Length: 297
Image (cartoon, rainbow, N blue to C red):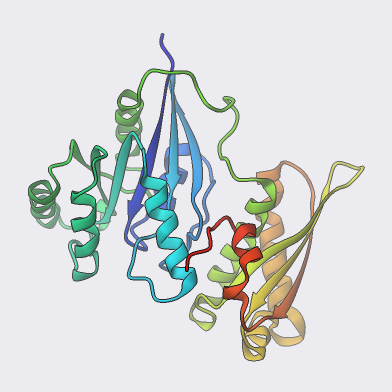
């Protein structure tokens, strides 16, 4: 059989379930997930295999109305991820439907020259009548190649979508080894896993006012790895939230991140975290390079 390989850009509004869908298509975790919107900050490629096809899934930050420099960098990364893709996978939260918030996104995607496939996600919690009405409206607005319905969290419809993508990518050699599931470096993955734990454990207490920087990544002689990270916050009050009483919250964040990282990296992980107050961290060019974003004026 002939090998096939292609780039699929996964775009949508914040909290549409893009990262959950990418993880489901790859078959294991490659992108961090939390109930919060705007969890994904960087372009991250998940690599899915189906038969003779290698599907390169670019999980992009959610596209929204950017206010801060970091927001603008995230949105720029999303649109850059869609450039020259063989196919744009436009993921929509079917439960919330066509809100005023995603209208500008629908208008922007309608003008893209790349072929489009609309994915209605979260169908397990959306009434059938609403799904059909939403599909009809989107077909009229976007004229996509197809509209498919899935639940990324339960796996419903994911196999059909993966089979469709496998046939849709072009003939050509694979770009990555068969056992590689992401283009993220271990260093970047480590920072993302810790950031996920910040989101999951702090909930509304510390929205988006933090970043994680991997300062040191050391391979040890016994096969384990020592990872030193600093969590950047803007104010002393935020540092106190991350630390918790006598450092208990920070220890729990580190413990859960370590437990998550060990199987992902396939080795024992020694994780050392500290919190640093840096009021202008969003204006630090070197940090943008570290987390994989371009500086946007």
